[in-house]
Amino acid sequence: MRRTEARELFMQLLFQMEVQNDYGQEIKERFILEHMEDSNQLEYFNQLSAAAVDHLTAIDEKLEACSENWKISRMAKVDLAILRLSAAEILYLPDVPNSASINEAVDMAKKFGGDESGKFINGILGKVVRSKDAE
Image (cartoon, rainbow, N blue to C red; front, side, top):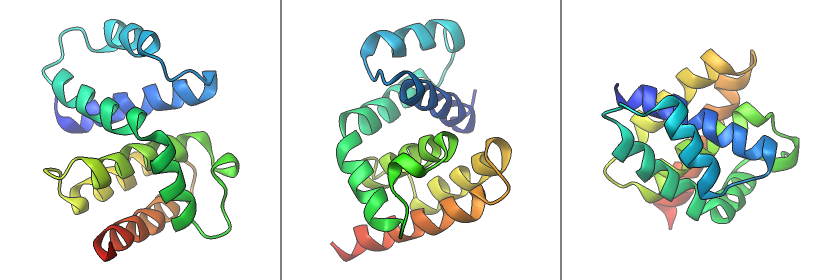
């Protein structure tokens, strides 16, 4: 398994967590047992989880600040999961290049999201990077 696959699986977990409104350890452990038991990317999956779930409030605040006229509650849940994952990488995993995180997010949006998801996600994540660089 590559990081791309780990990202896709973690995005699916984030989506599931959002739908069920449950960001607890038990749902993550169940997901890992069902989907990643023999994965060589479990360490990276856990890094993503720690970055995204532990900083969810800060990530959501940053996403809302960078998405003009869009509240988190109005975003498509798939797009939101992708944005949260990529924002977690950009803001909390400094060894992941911003461009790689954005490219992966746009690819996931094209694969799992709606027709305009790629452009929407690219625009917001570009603003996340610029605001991070300005700080």
